[in-house]
Length: 129
Image 1 (cartoon, rainbow, N blue to C red):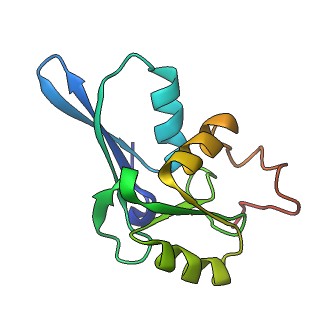
Image 2: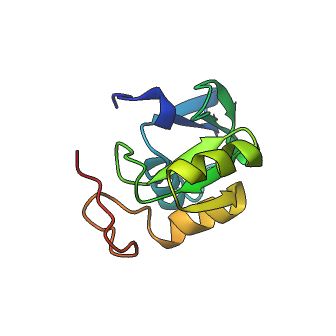
């Protein structure tokens, strides 16, 4: 998989036959879909890039902004932030919902990790260029 924009890059580290294995994703919905479809994997940790600093950080401690105006590679419309104030600041430019990891994962999992063709939950949402 090609990571086209580091702002959206994520990783799931799992316990494999030979130790820890990293699976890289170009958007949060791909990561959530993989984890849902492979429920038997033992997840060691998750990493993502901060939308602000682009540095790797623990996904489990991140705050998320889910907004129709966020143009993500695979249409999750989700960005990660290192703190709630960072997410709230971005929410002024990209109006949406700020949430914790648990809420974001439940949202993406329940929505079956929206893709560019299925954004009907957002009125007027668009993922086009």
